[in-house]
Figure (cartoon, rainbow, N blue to C red):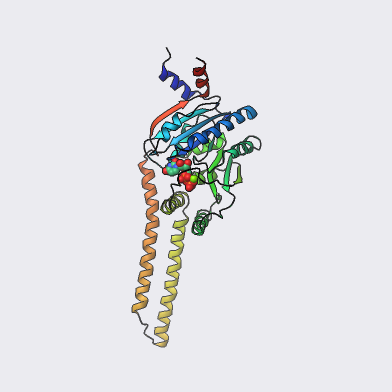
Amino acid sequence: MVNLADRAAADFQRAEPRLAGLSIIVPCFNEAAGLPQLHEKLINIAQMLREKRGLAVEAVYIDDGSRDATYAVAANLPARGLDVQAIALSRNFGKEAALLAGLRNARYGAVLFIDADGQHPPALIETLVGHWRDDGYDVVYTAKAHRENEALLHRIGVKLFYRLMNWRARQRIPEDAGDFRLLSPRAADALRQLPERTRFFKGLSSWIGFKQLRVDYEPEERAHGKSSWNYAALVGLSIDGLTSFSVAPLRMASLLGVALAAIALLFGAAILYETVVYGKSVPGYPSLVVGLMVIGGVQLIMIGIVGEYIGKILAEQKGRPSYFVAEHNLKTAERERQDAAE
Ligand code: UDP
Ligand code: MG
């Protein structure tokens, strides 16, 4: 009789030769309804990649604490021509943590991140793979071709965010880049080596360097359900991204301080001049109050900014894992074939 546990352990260890394959990582939060449809498309792509390029493919579905049957659905998807991993996190940890879980559990060298909601066209995967295998690019990222269908406020926010993010940065983070991207084995390895816990993959994949390529695409409408981001969450993610990536806000705080001090100095000199030369007594109360309020407000904002960084330091310092895995299931194409034959 076969020992099922031994079989599972062997399957987890033995991916076909580590470099000649692609792990497709799909973070899922309440995506049960759309997974089978996406999986069908991945099966077709896997078949094509195997035939045309001799690439082995696996799909890694990470259930990020969904409230629907996402994990059950993912674990039951057929391993037809590609291996299927389903991983359930112990609760909702957020998309970045789900991506990290996928990256760590990927059994092949190259990895590709794709959303579960159908907004990232799977048909593009072949193009991305081509840029990696044929043209030697390490990071092939996609960017929305245009943002006309997004609200003006949103677009302004995005612009502002990247302005701040890239302010005097050595490695610019490309504007509009999404999480739909392919990483060559060495790029994926580089990402795995980064020790930080608060991750911002868009930024990190650019930060690691190597040969990067941008591919434009038309995002699709969500296949079902609705986006789990609202403005508050987006602002939160932006602040996280900014503070975990750049010290621009701190520099701005210092610059603003210098500017305010300079203005105050000039103002003081002007008052002194008027009093001494013209003997004018400057009317004080309103200007005092305005000055106090400006200084007080600016100081509070700056303390807030410093606090963001201290919070980041605290979170990193605590060193808690970014996620816990509750369930893990692997179905290999090979095993599925054997079992069907028996
Ligand atoms: N997602 C996740 N954890 C979360 C929120 C979202 O894994 O806490 C997944 C979600 O299932 C989807 C992807 O991340 O596959 C993008 O999410 P969404 O479509 O809500 O974001 P948007 O496309 O609006 O950026
Ligand atoms: Mg989406």
